[in-house]
Length: 494
Ligand code: GLU
Image (cartoon, rainbow, N blue to C red):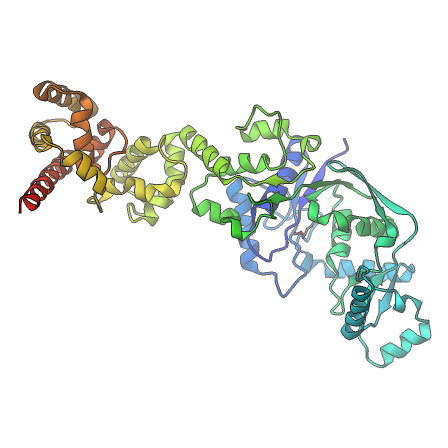
């Protein structure tokens, strides 16, 4: 294969959402697999809707996912500029060329005229298309309209003969009947290029070898192919990726929950899991494999294995994958990823001391196998960082208020208070003795202790929780639980 140059070309009018991120990922994987170049181009010709916040958000989302670009914003490159708004002279030059060569003409139709045309088409149950009336203007008529100060757009002289064939790497051979097209606008009244025009100039001048993008653009492709022809540019290869649907099979949107990379990040998804999951939206290697590392994806990805059918976004699967990746992280990386969630919950400073860090890591080690998302941390870890906010009522009733529990807690509190060390190996003998003392199974001792120190019946092992809390705090909570028990008993007497 000649050298591969692919691009991701977002319009900065909102967040980087799942669909865009997946398009970026497929391009990136393709580039990395072929030792090619991944270009990031910002399509910001819609001045009213494009914002710098959106550009920043997109770049941040890409960085979060690890999709580094070889050319583009902040990086530069020899095919720049990489913002369409900085390429306007180029578009003008090619618009002039189209007009000069008789491939485009000025259209003076007003919006009222165009609306009437559309209305007429609707009445006749036809597609609302431009009827080409300005194509037929004589030079004198055009002159006259210019003299009247009428503004114009530039329309492409579409070829209506035959059909345009697209050999799509994913969809296969697609044939478009050229009569379905119309003379579409390439340059607006304000001199700005339309998407279909600018994208061709840029892809051609940036020597893009493969255009990999969402299937929503497939109907634009025959128009673009005609422009390539008119300007004498080589047509790149195309691959149109299937759409992403929500569980109700309608196109994925905000209604279905989080859709932007930023949102997923805030909800505690980690990039490895997101990248893995995005890759599975429309692509698969074989049915048996779900978990792919990035290097495996680079190795195994291929456009041939991208499905023609829409992909359904399955949040549960993403959550499950996230849990798999969280369990797999080494403690230092998990700590880095999770720290912002501790900070947000008020459990840690932005720059924790060594001691704080040790505690957070110990908490994480105990929670690592129990959480699927990092944003579960505030709730799952709250009892490590402050008093129990609320005891689970059922746990109190079923465990603490059971006959004999007060004695068990009394015993354990007394033994723990006297321990010189407070690590697992120090704690184990205390619980072993307690089993003998009360002639019962370990659970009968552990469960009340668990409720006393965490407020719930489900938590990591006490051998992990108690050392993190430390002796004084552990004993204080056991005593407090004893108080709760006696208060409840008294309340029931009266
Ligand atoms: N700016 C277009 C979009 O965001 C790019 C489409 C394309 O890749 O050609 O949809």
